[in-house]
Image 1 (cartoon, rainbow, N blue to C red):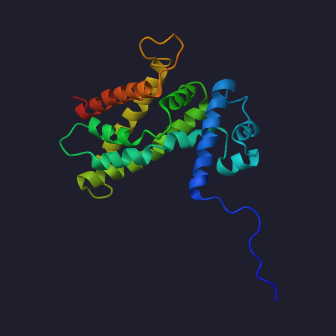
Image 2 (image 1 turned 45 degrees about the vertical axis):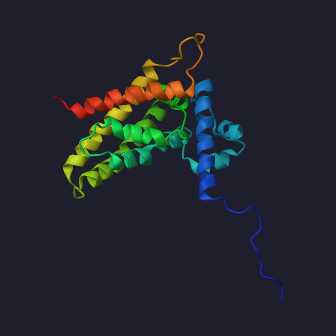
Image 3 (image 1 turned 90 degrees about the horizontal axis):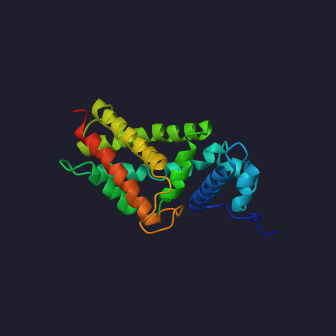
Length: 218
């Protein structure tokens, strides 16, 4: 009797490798969108930039605009976890500090900034950006409810999450639209800020936004 037939071909990709491919596609899409514009960028070009076929790109994403989603969703669970660890009676900005301490391996602010600036003129990307925030809000509400020991369905953490989510979105947009090209002192004009400076600038903008949320409407 012949030996049992084994599986042939390439071994299946691990979930970790699939996530890496999604992120590679996302970075390539942003670079191409910045250089060419969304309309002039094709799935084939995005795939070529990371060494995969257009078929592979469409296997992971339903449209070229949605290719950027991994860059936008990367921090949602991180931020939700930061809200759970936010100590009662402490400023909301401390939750940001907790998240920032673990986010150094996340997307570079310059990449996210370039993407957010594109959402101003590209309706498809704007839709993805807003949908990402819409989908993040329930995760923030659950984290805030868990922190406060409130039951599921309580309105208070839902309202808090909406305020928090809006502050994050507006702060990131403000930073992207108003500090483009900011650089460290002494560097030539046109030189983009180094990653550390860019992260510090973004963190400062977020702290201002979260302080406003913490103060309420007054």
